[in-house]
Length: 421
Image 1 (cartoon, rainbow, N blue to C red):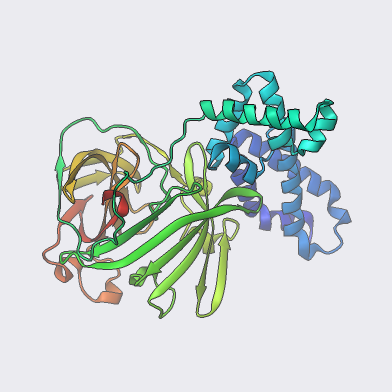
Image 2 (tube, helix red, strand yellow; image 1 turned 120 degrees about the vertical axis):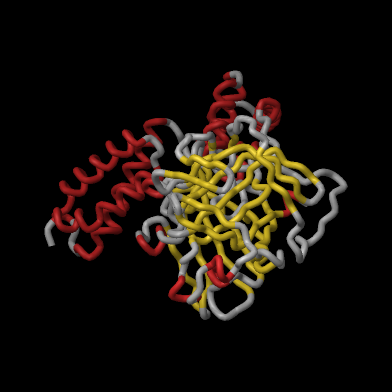
């Protein structure tokens, strides 16, 4: 096959790869053009055209690496970063760089040589012509100066709060619109999984059918380390699902286990990969796997992910239980007080109208800490009618309904996490 045909077949995968690695769209487009030009010039040297895709990805990888070298944004050793920062994430990585650049020259040079360039203490000693003890002393001082400017504090439960399993019955709650202007909030939780993809994060959440409020699925989820998928850096997340609901079942087992790789940038939170075991076979999906990945884990333009900085756009109009939206979109629709488990939470309501799944609408109540207080799912009245042979307002006649663009949606189940305990 000729170059043009092979490139047309693989262009989408290469674009996705470069856009995931390079956040600046103009720079990414330049790199794509350089990749295509380089591939065209070297195409005659590719003996086996069956390897065109992997060969092209390798060229794109080298171009991205060249970009970062030219920008002097070197990859930071993960263990080293964890030592000086106590966490990770792409957005935080650039924050770290900014802080280091604000330090005095002596501190900046020693941290750059040790953590960013990767010189050992012995190598720094020789290069700078100073004793190894002086290198250690300077590193100790530089680390402390760095920490004094680095103010990140991960979410932690209050001292004295006892550990307990999520309740078997959903706590009673009320949702009251307070007529105040919705606040802007930074919510870094991974879409649908209520965990922030940063080191040392973990949480537990559960689903509760309505109207009886009985717990169905319960999930324990935690970040277990650093990970990289096709040279895009993120964190690895382990999720253990107990009694998974029908939509989340992998096989006949009452237990499901998944692994994710997810990434937090300055503006978005997204999945990079997912794996699970099904009928004895471990299956892997990454952001390069087109439909197999996109239909379950991709979100946003070019799989950019979910926005982390949330503010009301005015796209969705809501009055009581009547909602009007000109498109399938996610937007803040108001400010509410959620009273649950004996506590009150000043929250905004983030409504998702079929952006993730057709005929499904959700409400996500998020407080000023960027944490989900309550998540509620509504099905279109005829959702999967061919399977259930029943309309949802007949199946669940006592459940709340909302009207979206004149169409009935019925409340199905709720979700809470250990954040509200």
